[in-house]
Image 1 (cartoon, one colour):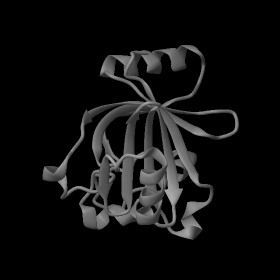
Image 2 (cartoon, rainbow, N blue to C red):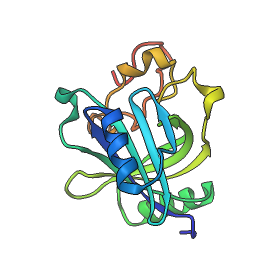
Image 3 (cartoon, one colour):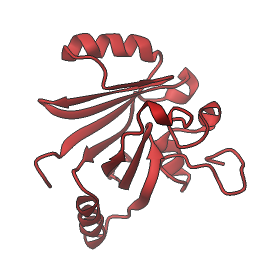
Length: 172
């Protein structure tokens, strides 16, 4: 993996504003991205991408949603996909998808204990001009219909929500 690779952690939190205040004090830097119910921190030292997803207590379960490694290119995602497949690990592909308020290309696997890992590259940060779309690529008003990545993967669905072609709520 390239020098820009960094660990990614996604945490489910009860109150994103409270969590952001804590992590801003903890890391000593402001959040990299803030959206309703979502924030992330993009640290260079240590190389870490921390996402905070506000979820209702009944949906939150464990605080850890998933883990990941951010890489620098689509080719690195493809190489990881090939390595995982060659190793016999079952993977789930998400090419050119919108998740966490950014367009990404990614591949997912689960470790033996069920922890979800993604290897991904950011294709587009989808900054303020893309505010009409929520965390999972649908109209922001529909974003609350999405379920957590772990629940979607366990049900055999997509890891990040994409509006189904029939227009129904995602993760159905």
